[in-house]
Image (cartoon, rainbow, N blue to C red; front, side):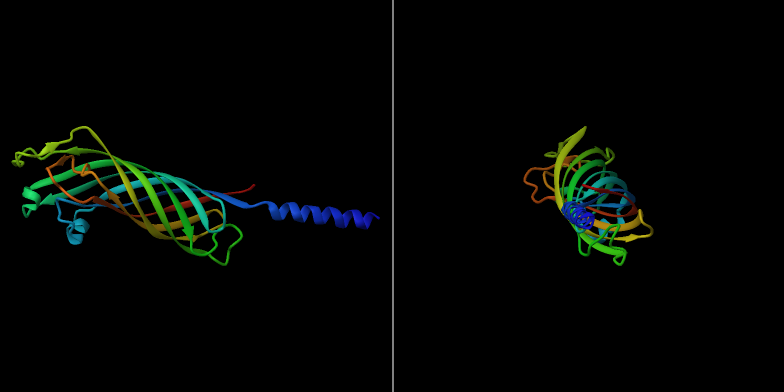
Length: 220
């Protein structure tokens, strides 16, 4: 009879254990480059790469399966661009803005990643991201602006929609490093701090960063 009780207890325990799902809280921090592509560098990749500036980012993520994670983050950085070819009527006018970017993302690891997937020490991933971009700009007052230029001094607010790819590599049970790239479409022409009538298209905010990833494991 005691054997039957023991078997029943083990069976119930296994059933309850199977219904529990594994979770992790992931803390991340990193630094990298921040690049603008918009009306004042003509969307040129070469110009955007040469005019890159720095940024830093931190986030907290909730990994609710071995492959999926929700993530809330905050980035701070700067952008720069110099219009040297009369783009949109501007010549010699530079874009100098700083930005604060709170965001939320859904992230998918392409292979199971976490405490109990040690064979997958390296995991590539992709993510989709929705953000708000709060920017402030400085103006070059030594050159003339076209007469129909509208200035947006102070803080400017924009939405950002985009995503990116990355790879994370586990160094120990809790610590990993990562590298990732993201691109965000930022409509509204607010990043520069000034606009002209009938400007079309969204600006782009492109970021590349490396950093550290710390995982805290829990059961639910």
